[in-house]
Image (tube, rainbow, N blue to C red; front, side):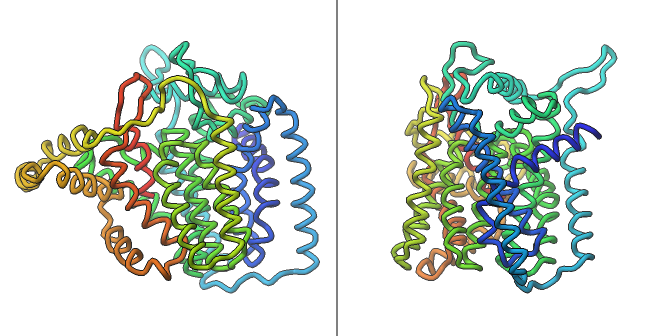
Length: 467
């Protein structure tokens, strides 16, 4: 219980000053609890990026100074707003009953998602650590990053330079282990998954709340995304596309799960901009999108083109300083992450490999499907197509499968693309990402840790599509 309280207090101290100073002018019309949720969600990428940049500049001690300055700014804004007493925006639902229901839903989801997350399993000989190789790599990375950020090499592959393009998700845990007295195993297996899950729930709730103006619907979405979604994914298994579930990836992969949270935060900020028309919300969305490179570069390659293309459409349509500033600040944030996280060596090098993803992950899954009309008829039909057409059709099917075959995806994509001149930035980003995913699925690969050219890097990027 004590480690949990220490972690909660330390994370609140870490995230809230950054997020509050950045978001409070733009979230003035939200209820107080919603504003705190927004501050925590936005503070997650801002605080991590700030610490890494200062660590890269060999001045990590300045992080404490920056934190103190932002705390003063946040307190000043809060006191000034207390005098003004801004009226919260009216919303359907609300009240203490809804708050209690939402907390109960959140508590249930937290329990369901973490009940099997313990590090050690009792065996007759004592305690066993039975987890995938990712866990060993990520735990070793924690120890390496406690020596300095960004790390110089992969600790599990001595001598292999590490192009540290996905270190930001580790930063809160590094700070907890270094300064809050928590053990690295506790941080990695308990605190970090709970942090990601809590912030994802906050971002999803806020996005739906702002989009619909209905707190009841926003609360109802949480079990849909985080209970029903994993159940559907479990029932589908490895059908159509071979590989781990996006929900397993979120819970078990430190940088990948952190990147999913960050892109959900981008979605919430775009919804805030659409509803409030506050320029700061759009600029913050672009900054967070740029920082997403430091969480998971593979996912950035997928989501960032969709995001900046949507801002380009918005700039042509509105021609406002806010959109131009958002593009400039977003690219500057990406540049800062690229410069401070770029490493040496072949790991992560991009390759053009047309059809490799389909041959390795789609066709074998179709061939092993238990339904005859899939492994015989569908696969046979695809095999008779020209290679380029087969690649396009198979990659499109795989992208749809990675979104759990949701019927809303093709419908919304076609509808919003047809109305692109009037669609808001939130819709544009999250339909364009499916359009961008298809050519990436056809041709995108990268050098993996075993020095093999693998399209599994596309799988890691596309896991964000389900959310």
